[in-house]
Amino acid sequence: MSADAIARVTVALQNRLASAIAGPVYVGPPIPDDVGARKAALFLFHVVPNQALRNEPHYVARPSDPAGPLIEAPALPLDLRFLVSVFRTAGSGGGGVSDPDELRTLGLIVQTLHERPFIDGTRCLTSSSGSRPSRTRWKSSAECGRCFRRRRTGRRWSTS
Image (cartoon, rainbow, N blue to C red; front, side, top):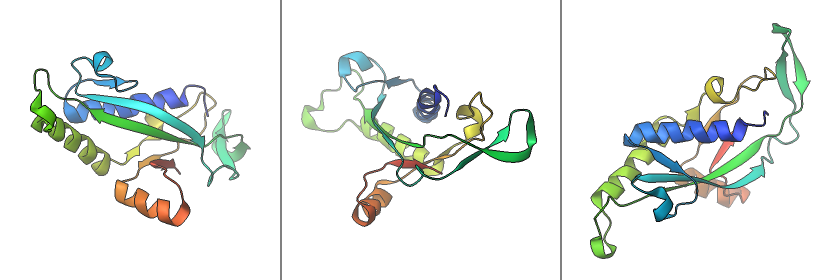
């Protein structure tokens, strides 16, 4: 894992969501004053080691011979838990009623994560040490419910 892997995953997710809603996505705590005119916020709220991959060997290509045999390298597989928040358009009070734009924005985000559940590691997760990319898969809430009952975990995505 490179030191900027978490930042790269966050930027890749931010770019994916921004292209889905056709507007900028704020990265940080979902505080309306900080979000400003943006429609959505992305907040990394929990980072934990991946229990399933923690003791698995991690193989990478040698920097001097990328086509040669793989060698074992140290790895730190992580589960990153993000909170996605959507915000009302400017001037729509609603009196507790959801803004149709707010719900549409949320629908676009969920649809995008469903249709494209992987972040290709060649664009954001390849480290300077030449390690092979991993893939990031986003789990739906239905999958998380099954996961929680079966394995007692609230993981929103995992690397494999």
